Length: 135
Image (cartoon, rainbow, N blue to C red; front, side):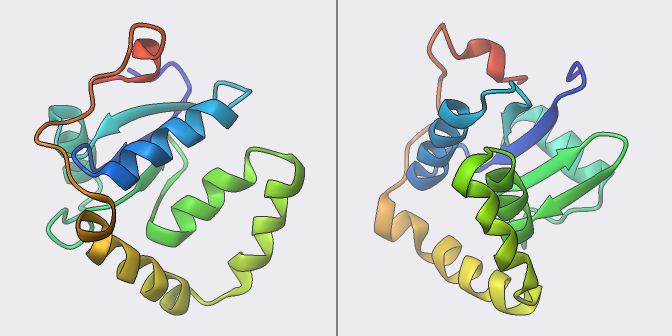
């Protein structure tokens, strides 16, 4: 299904989330990630398999097939560290207890539609980006 790639599930109708996906794709020099919307059939399947309640967790999910999955701030930090360079400095924030980092993350997630807007439908990737999306 994913050809050995890690999978990032994201809110497909959120402008902030779609911008984050484009940001990740631009910096994913090792072609590590594939993407699917949480609202897609694959997103629903993968979250159900991992007992992730998308009524409570409706933001980023990083799945490392055969290893683990991460949600919210730990997922974002793990993704960012993979970019190399100064992005590796994000590791410092892993020392922040998840209860605090996820609290900050939740504030942004709760307000993301109001602050950044919302789409009527999930993002449709361009032809050159289509291979990055698995559903």
